[in-house]
Image 1 (cartoon, rainbow, N blue to C red):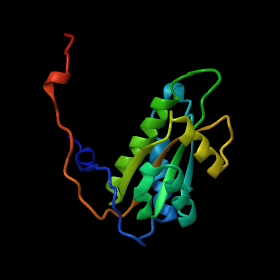
Image 2 (image 1 turned 90 degrees about the horizontal axis):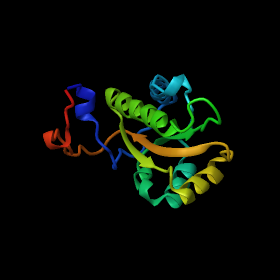
Image 3 (image 1 turned 135 degrees about the horizontal axis):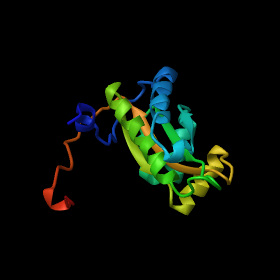
Length: 167
């Protein structure tokens, strides 16, 4: 199994004051933009945040992002639902981009935590207002990023009972 997949964890405690650089954010975003998408629609944009006041405001409007108290950056994945072409696939496409960010972060020695926003209407509306995201776009998730200050145990494992083979 790929070592990055084995090592990936949801980190909820980061080393305070250890910044994530713009170069590191760009590397994560490049990985995101290499993700597959239906008919190569690439229905995403990204908002990279390092401003402490904005990270704190996200915590206020989305309590499940408490790890942003110690994280020094976040990326908000913004979905661009198409009106034609591969309609309806943006959740899978944005999830693939998110997973690429999470795995690239592991390769860089960074920690992340994926915090869902879509499809919860009040979280979508609050983040849309805070980050001035137009109605035609959807704040899909918030990814907390920083230098890990914990090493959680592995969760999950292969379960044969969850697999059906059609041969």
